[in-house]
Amino acid sequence: MIKCSFNICTLYRDINRYQNLVINIKNAGFNKSRIFGLDNTRNCFDCYSAIRKFLSDSQSDFTIICHDDVSFEKLNQKMLIKQITDYLTRFPRAAVFGIAGRDSRIIGGQGHFIGSHGEEKWGFDLTRDILSLDECFLIVKNGLNIMVGEGLEGYHFYGTDLCLQARKMGYSSHVIDFPIRHESSGTIKEDFFYAKKNYEKYLNKNADKLFIPTTCTLLYSGNNIFLRAFSDAFSIIILEQSNHKDLLCAEKCIRENWQTISHQLIFQFTHTVIKIYYVLTTYYIKLKVRIKYLIKRIQSDFIWWKKNWIKHIFCFNFNL
Image (cartoon, rainbow, N blue to C red; front, side, top):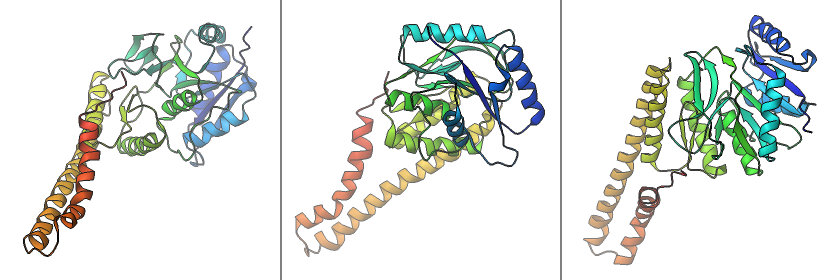
């Protein structure tokens, strides 16, 4: 028989909202003494540092990490235990669970929940591995040493990172049918895209996937500037489909990112042309250097083009 005791953990700033969450959790049949909240009114924690503390201190079989604005509606602890035991029976290596997430398909998600636009039924496909989970409600199996990555901080992508860390250790992540209510749709503004860039840099060194879809964006772990622009463009499509409240702000941030990308492209191209022209006119035309030296002076530019254009543009890997 699978043992299922829970620690329920949240990071909060509004004491009234936290107290409402505690009442809601207790009414759903969970042990009140197993509810742990971190008061973050003084910004002592971010989500990653809070999760490290939650998972390190947890003495239960599972740790639930949730936002302070979720409610269980007509759900209860017995229904959650049934979902988890059913999945563990079918997938013994299951380690991380959520109520919404994305697999390797860049279109469409999995899950069932009640959000700011009402009930959402995205469906389930148990044949596909989940690559990311929505952060509003996460469940981590204890005793497996699963932890968010070192050096990460902030308030975004920890659901994706828990899936990544579990996958690297040989465990799997899953979306369960436990339709909680989440009162907000999250905030996607400047800090979100700053966090996206930072996490993509982390993925570049630590991930085994080129693209990782999430419920609100598309992460790209490569170096190709065109594929990076594609991931940003697709993020807009995802937000449009969900009618997200921060769509206009997201579009503004992505336009600014595209301007940076275009400047990088123009700079690299112009830099290469100027250097080749300089070498040809200064050395080759005046016959002060041999052909081999000319090639040596410009080979670094050809290496850049080969690495950033040929390698990626003609060798797509969408991990479908």
